[in-house]
Image 1: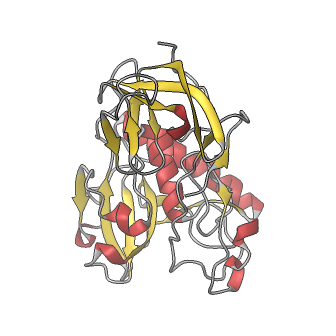
Image 2 (image 1 turned 90 degrees about the horizontal axis):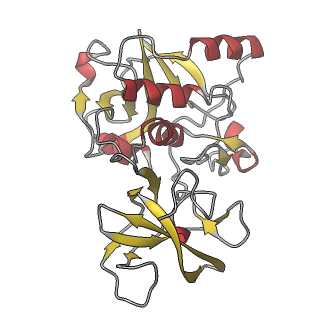
Length: 292
C-alpha cells in the first residue's frame, strides 16, 4: 500500500489500494454528448421512496455524474488517476485519466453517503457479509429500492465472477461508471444474461452519537491504551477498518513511512487510541472531531 500526501506536509494518509475492477467493461465506447450529460445529471436522484440512508447513497453517487471512467481509479475521497488497461483500447491510457471505475464509485457512494465501508473489488462487494438484504436475478428490479447495488458477472450464479456493479435509482434506472471512454452516467438497468441480482447496504449500523466515522489504512495497526506507544497495544486492526472517533488529542510523536504526526484519536468501541497517521483522511488533524 502506498501513501498519498495530506494537506499538511507533516502527516500522511493512504487511499485504498487500487483494485482492478470492472474488468469486463473496459471496451470501446463514445463519450456522451454534453447535452446528454446535463440531462443525466438532472435525472440522477432517488426515483422512488427510500429510507434517508439509501437516498444519501444515491445522492453521493449522483454527485459524481460527468466524472470520467478510469480503470482502477477512485477512492472513498473522490476521483483518482487509474491504471492503464492491459487490453488496450480506450482504457490504454487511464493512468492519465482522473476518475472512477465501477467498484470505486460504489465504494465512494456508500462511504460518503452513509459511512458504510465496502471492501475493494466488485467480487468482494458482491459477497459483502454486511448486506441487509439480497435479491436474485429472477426477481428483477421489482423488490429493489434506491441505493441498492446491482451486479453483473460472467457466471451470474457465482458472485466471485462479478465484474460490474452500479447503484440503483428506482424506476429501472441506475447510475454507473461503465467503461473507459465514458463518463459516470445514468443508464437503464440491463437485465441481461449476466445480471447477477442485487444487494441492499442501507440499514447498517451508523456511527454512535457524538462520533465521526473514518477509515483506517494498513495492517496490524496497534490501538494503544493511551496516546503513545510506550505501552503494549491493547488490540490490533488486521486491515483497513471503519472506526468511530469520539475526540482527538496531542500525544507522542509518531513517524511512519517518512511522515510524522503527534495527533491521536480516541475510539470508544475499543476503549483505545490510534495515531492519526493511520486514519485515511487528507487532514492530519481530523476535521469535525473535537479535542479531548
